[in-house]
Image (cartoon, rainbow, N blue to C red; front, top):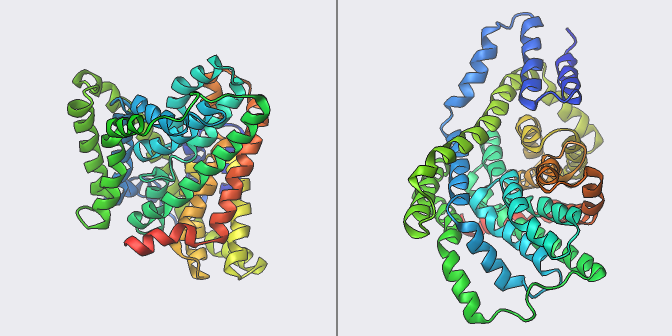
Length: 427
């Protein structure tokens, strides 16, 4: 059997709109059924073996922590805090939307979770105040891209596990790029709002006493990323243990501090977390078997030779990989692309001298932005489905925001210090 056939089968299944995990798993199974000298039992062994990984436990823990915090009453508190900080600016409610995504990033760690929550809470309010629904959906989806970059992002956990890179360093490295994405989107909101006449939420700036009160209300919520990053930095717990601590912290805050998380809600919370975890884990299991096929056929080595034939300069190679990831992200869901391509590209990048933490941030930022790029961006369909706008309207409104996000990606790529300064100072 031609060595490229399983890969083409996977692409064909994806083009036919088959679920990502099934497309990857079926393509891998065809390889095991047709390859000589490869026992079919290895297919199941590879799928199951990855679930025995202790570091990978961080994924369900952080997903559960995010779901708990979403049910714990933090969103309204963080929204009030964002309102006191930026509500007086042009396009005030859209500015609140962007800042809320940045603050929520340290809670949910998931772009889709953030987009779903804000589509239900922020967009109806924006529409009532005269914002175009498509613009509201576009800024909600675009700003939710920040969530996986601010710690504890699920994408950073996955990259750290797959590339054997310090998750603690990746968490620290994501902070500055996440803030830059926030600032860039706020600039876009300001420009668009001035042209369209979107007004501030409040006539004057909030007083410092009002801001202090809002910060005080949100302090417990804002403390979660600090507990996680600080605990990892000072060796109190590993990234996996940090996920368990995050779950415990979220339950204590929700039940005893904010008192909005009830015991009766736990079955619903657990069901939501299990569903979200199962989607990611099924892709990881299928990708593990597909990864065996790629290793057997030496596809990473061949891909590396092709890329190195283009250039061996680390910076140019990083730009080439970025262009490749942009096109991949337009066709494949971001988490699936990250799981499939990290074992392929990370060794190549490290081999030419690119810092693995820097490469991880570039890769996660790139493939997270893919969530708002057509035709398969999951954030597009999450927000348009909830808001009720057409995809073509969404795409038109999202173009300035995509431009801003890609400018940040270029900056993060060309200036490693943006992502590496905090890890070097603190770890």
